[in-house]
Image (cartoon, rainbow, N blue to C red; front, side, top):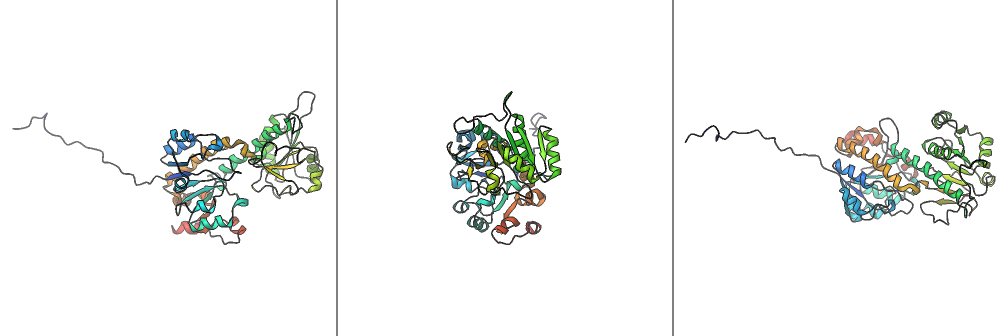
Length: 396
């Protein structure tokens, strides 16, 4: 029987199944066991953004307790909540504080570890363990974008500056342990005086918060060009000056709050200079290696201190560090946005090594690379030899 036109089978074009050869990376989020580091790298919303890019998120149960997010919130975002060893066994591990040697043994060989530089907390044992496991270690605070900015370091510095002034305002207003005064004063009552050393992002953030509250703000720096740019942005409410010894000493003598940030050359204030300051002055050190500018003062880590420990009058003067720990959840939100941008480059570059090859901003953040130290500062601390990472990337 001759088939009719209606029953004749007609071959139809079909779209060929396209297989993706791109391997999806897993991102591990182990809980930070260092009590001095309360910040966490990703919020549930940040995890969702990375999952939508194609990444798999493995988070240790309870890892986000420090920023008051539950495991269920991450599960709802698409993350997998697991044990510590499973989180550590991911392709990419984010842990802001240095991992200890026992944790490093659970990292996959050749994995990518994203952390903060934290040279004052990095041990020789930890470094050797990273080298033995061929871990690619990137210090996120050294990562640069295409314009030369350091997005992770800048956002954390901004949070530190604002958090320091929020803490200072709380300390000063405390009628039991503080002076019981307002940072900005009121009509007929003069405002507090805030002296800020440095004019970078953290310093400007502190100055903006202090002047916004009505305080009298003085800013000092040796870098006149940076000082000029900072005062242009902050406006005439901030009094700026070069670091003339006598002018700076007078400002420290009358200050209610002192905020110290990185400047070059870095000054040191001895016990005689400290003795001239007001009793109960609130001093913050926002540098990466705190305590060196005020060697005679006891340091109080705000991530570890109890409410009684942070009394600004007992001892009469102290140096407060780790101010950003007071805003750990804000830091997580800001870091999440920055990580989403960074990980997108890993997807488009199809891997860590390709991203390091194509982006000099990631190369300069590398600390260890496949069994070698590639950061001169790290190598110098431990009397080791650093290898230029570009040699490896050229041969790869």
